[in-house]
Picture: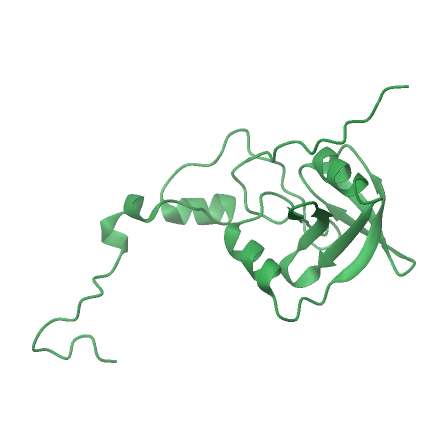
Amino acid sequence: MTKRSTRVPAPVFCGSYWPGHVVHWIPGLHAANDPDPDTEQGRIVRVEQDGIVVLEFDGVEVTLWNHEPERLQVAARRNEGRVQLQRRWSILSTASKDGRYFFSVADPAKAAVRPCPASPPVGDLVELLEEARGFSVPLDSVDAALVSDPTPSVGTNDNVP
């Protein structure tokens, strides 16, 4: 019998922010700070290699998908399989000694699951929104042409709605 690792692997950054892939920091913060999180308490029933995760909430099984099923299983195993689901943010979480592990989840019954891209998407901001459903870049790397001048023109009403 092989010993199961209790160390949670580092997250995989596939570059996709579609449901079930990388948790983008904006919905992650919303989920963490939601004053009315409407979380469902449940447990993992099983995790399959293709990313299917079967959960149980109050006796009802729910099937979701995540691109890192093994990492999710290791993290939840540390809590006897207990998880919390925030459907509003498509976030599944499980407690850790320092906080919570967050996983983006997709409902395969509602939309086709997108596989991880072969490499993180590249391109202009519009392409990244279309291909990866988001991006995160340092502010100083954003093309100046896409940032409007926040300084109003002196002596004109051009900036007044």
